[in-house]
Length: 331
Image (cartoon, rainbow, N blue to C red; front, side, top):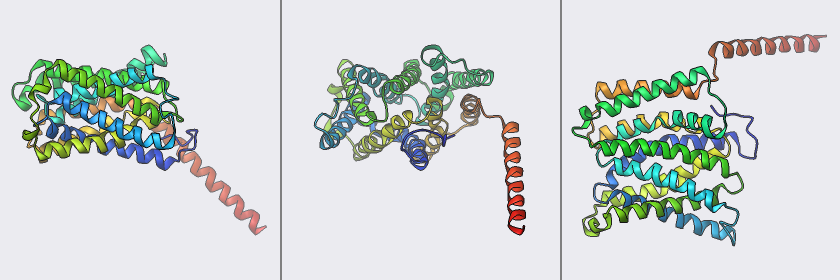
C-alpha cells in the first residue's frame, strides 16, 4: 500500500506511522463525537473543536516563523476548510444525532470510491479500470442498503440525517482532492492550520443559523462530553487530521483514503461495547458489501498472479546469484 519509491525526505516508517494514526484514531472519533453531542450541540462542538485546534497549531507555528501563514493560498485553504472540516466533518457530527456511530462510519467508507470518481471527472482526468468501476458500483450498493435499512438498526431515523451524512462524504472527498492539489510538503502544516480555521468558522456560522447557542447550558455539559471534545481536539484534529493531510503530500489520494476501510470496524466495535449499539446480521452484510467494493477500487492495480510470478522470478534470480558467488569463491 505504501510506495517505497516516494520522493522526499520522509522515511517509509513515518508514512506507515501516519497511516496507523488515521486508521486507529479516526475509528475512535465516531464514538467521541457520539459522547460529545450528548450534551453539546453538534455544530457548536465542531466549531469549538476546530477553532481551538487551529489556535493551538497557529501558536506552535508562530514560534517557528514570524509569518506562519505567509506561504498559504488562503482562498484554496478556505475551500478546503469548508469542504473538509466544515461540511465533511460538521455534517457527520450533525448526522450522528440520529444515526449510530458505527453506521455513520460505514457510510463514510464510500469516500475512497467517491474520491476515485471525482478525481477521474474533475482532477486527474484519468479513467479508472474496469475493476475500479465494478468496485464503485458494489460500494454504492452497500451504502444504499445501509441507507434503506438503517431503521432496522436504530429505530426511526430522519431522512435529513442520512442526507447530511451523504453530503458529508461528497464534501470530504472534494476537500481531499482540493487539499492535495494546493498543499505541498513545505506548507502542509500551515495549510492545515488555515483550513481548520476556515472549517471552524463555517461550523460556527451553521451553529448560529441553527440556533444552537440558545441550547448551550455549560452547567449541563457532562464530564464525558468535555473529555470527548478534548480528545477530538488533540487526537482527532491536531494528530489525526495532520497525519491525513501530510500523507496527501506523499501518497496518492486513493491510498490515503484507505483509512475508511478500517474505521468502520473500530467504530462498530466501540459503539457496541461502550454505547450498546447493536451489531446485526444486516450491519455485517452491508459492511462486507461496502468494504468489498471499496477494496476493489483501492487495489485496482494489484494482480495477484503477476505479483506471485514476479516474486518467484526474483527468488530464482537471487538463488542463482548466490550459487554463482559460491562458485567464484571456491574458484
